[in-house]
Amino acid sequence: MSETKTNHPHGVFCWSELCTSDWKNGKAFYTELFAWGADDQPIGDDLYYTMLQKQGDDIAAMYQMPNEQKNAATPSHWLAYIAVDNIDEVAAKAKQLGAEIIAGPHDVMDAGRMLLLNEPGGALFALWQGNKHKGCKRLGELNTPYWHELATRNSAKSREFYCQLLGWQCVEKPMEGMNYTLFTVADQPVAGMLEMTDEWPADIPAHWMIYFAVDDCDNYAARAQQLGGEVCVPPTDIPEVGRFSVITDPQGAVFSIMTSAMDDVKCS
Image (cartoon, rainbow, N blue to C red):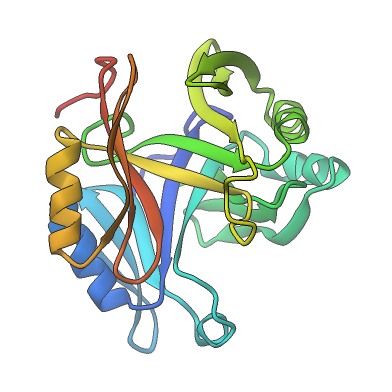
């Protein structure tokens, strides 16, 4: 763990964590796709919390899904963490605002303090108050988590929840026949939101999508397919924003990749 006792700014996405049905093969997929290193930290008998790394720095993590979740047919999934200054205060507020507290707040050894919750619209996410581990050490770089986007069936309700909970501001952006919501902290975009229309399959719940920044969306989508992933949305241009693709990994976890057209990704 890092020795730095600090935290990312309140309201900023700070960590990404993969719960996978096949840790060994899942690790092989992501380390090959993104050229990540992996630091396996033992957490039980033949179980590991793997720090996924870029040039030796922690940028995300993954672990083997517990058997009870596998037996319940829980799909593999990415979980996004948002940094907060006082997790106990925010937890109490989240409950008042109608969120379902799933776990926490509780300490994760001396790394920090976490909370897992479902917001009123049903999207799962986590909160993090860093201590010795603040989260991702390379935000805003290639091959690291870049953008987070909420798909919800009630954007007005979700907007009110997150703005009240985290102090986010929001800006409406017309985009290809729909209104896209930008959430901001100190006038800087931190996340987006779109409304799930009737065209979305009814069995897809509200969710946070994690985008990873890449330098060539088409090449990474093709590489993901070669490694056993499925390209759900082929590389597609968003005018003035960039080119993205939605991918399902071989174990079923969904994520997106984005080549930004906004000159906002560091190459180091």
